[in-house]
Length: 145
Image 1 (cartoon, rainbow, N blue to C red):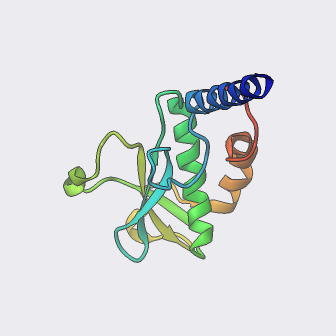
Image 2 (image 1 turned 120 degrees about the vertical axis):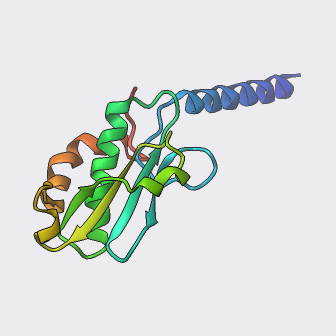
């Protein structure tokens, strides 16, 4: 009887952990396609990419904006560039689900004449500024919501 009670307690504890995990906001991580949320990218051209993020209902909009901004800078550096511009969306963008917050970025290593009316964002400076804010939400770090 003692062994059966112990198994019941173990399964109950496991169930409680799974429920708690399901109630947490989406952390900063790559979306792995299992409805768990996270960021992903779409390549429009050699230097224009879409950075998207899906979160659950417990992920505040401010945190999603923070994650998008951080991922844009991180992605720019991963691709070997130093700067990026946030671009407007073309009219045909309707085929991407509008519920996902997203940025359309142009990767560059310096100013681009056609985009002087937009802010040129230094990826390294953005990462340095944003990393302390994002680190507590990275997968594997423990942060209470």
